[in-house]
Length: 200
Image: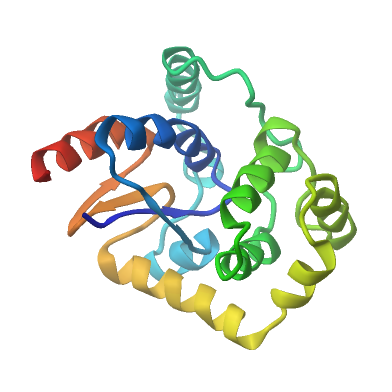
């Protein structure tokens, strides 16, 4: 069964989804394929914008979304999360790094660590020196990754991933696909699991 998680490190809801996915994988026996996409590219292609923009001027909606986040954290017993004070962060560099890491044997560790540096121990992960230090602190091959993400083929792969995501129906992150069924948002993980079970 093909289950894809289209993610960008810049989305806090994608990070929270990432923390919950392992339990779904254990319960269903199905491995999610992590697909790096560039959320800015998705927004541009679909005319969408981040909640930081779309919630401006709307009374009560931002407060409600904050309440829903707290409920999600409590429900899943998540404690290693905090808002990134540098948000929004330009994720182009670290998303290209994810595409490069996917060609190596440390992709899962890369994803875990970059998410940690974004949303558990938040840093300004769009400055090369900070990114380099974060890689080294995580035991990742900093020079190799920073060199690899400059490869035109890696840049093109991220572009292609993003275009494919939009073609499949995505308009933001996190987006999930169970075969051809699309689900958007961390709150839809219950439905994702239901769909997986119904297709087994």
